[in-house]
Image (cartoon, rainbow, N blue to C red; front, side):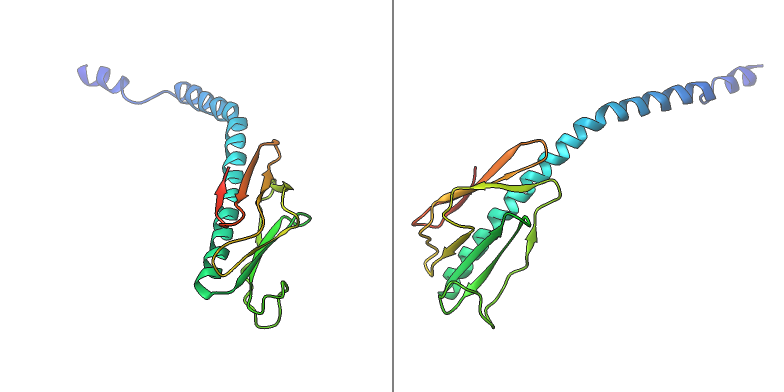
Length: 158
């Protein structure tokens, strides 16, 4: 008799299991909009950090190789890249190194810039004549900027 009573207390009934699964599904559905907002902010922050890192890499290449390096971004295609301008003519010629072309994550875009053009040239000492910022914006209208300091060529995320 003790064995039968003990056997009845083991496990869960199907009804109890279905209630728990339903509650977990409801919690997942309610948390989905918050998760989407989080992922959009995460992607924007990642793109801003990668843009800044790419600019710093271009600056470091200019110093290491004692050449000019031109960083470019295209607001129409949301892409950016840099090239080593060995002959210092401002254009990429045959034989001059071109970095990978980076594209912003879907939903992010170049929103604005305060530079005179979509080109920043880092000199052989890592300096640049330009001061300004490049602003990225996501679909929720949240913005982050990368600032370039003229004279020193330092790059910072605002």
